[in-house]
Amino acid sequence: RIASDQLAKITSTLADERRREAGISEWIWLHSGKKNGRDDHIARDGKEYSDKEPPTDMPGQLPYCGCRSQAVLKFD
Picture (tube, one colour):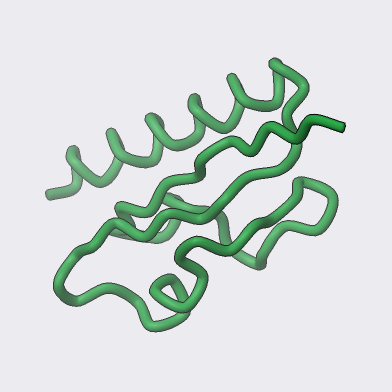
């Protein structure tokens, strides 16, 4: 379980870094859909966030969190 948790954290961190390197600072929180998900993570599902004003914890960083972020592209 520890190895799978660490792998999920690394994967989430790498995806966020790739998004930032691409110049994308806005993203949507995607809940993992786990049966016993954290209430605050379920409430964040589908909400848009920015790197300028991120939530207190990032997707996939708390222990056994399977949440992800999805980049948002905005065209003027």
